[in-house]
Length: 213
Image (cartoon, rainbow, N blue to C red; front, side, top):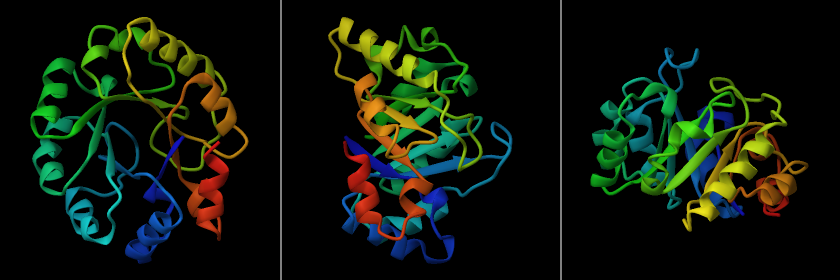
């Protein structure tokens, strides 16, 4: 299991130290939520902050665009050294174009799905994706409770991927903790985004180990 701590739950007054702490603690990625205040109710941070953080860690950047018009962020994310980019199927009418725009910039392309969005929405483009991000809470706010039916959705996606002979990692974001991590792994998740379950703990290394089931 790969762990991607979400800096949305970190102490913003000491971001550089927070990044060094999770890197030392065994994190595999840094998850960065970009919110526009329109697709989701909140605003978070944008490309300038991501670019500034690049020199603070060697961990790959996993950027989640909770925005309308995510294509407008791609040039900046490429220059900031981003490794993975996910955008929402609910926000983009031309999925194929967006996927290729990301890949053409040398970044891995993923699609994020809200809890109420069907897997059928990515049926045609699934073979093009480098990963799929399943939201297990409604996006826009940290600290929400895990939505239980997400487990069935993850299992169904895992089966869909295997039936097609694909190898596409499933990432899960929302309410992830050490109690549901084993269930998520059993359902087929390979990357867990963790906010307060990592940054809310004093010992980040222990918190990350607890999630690596």
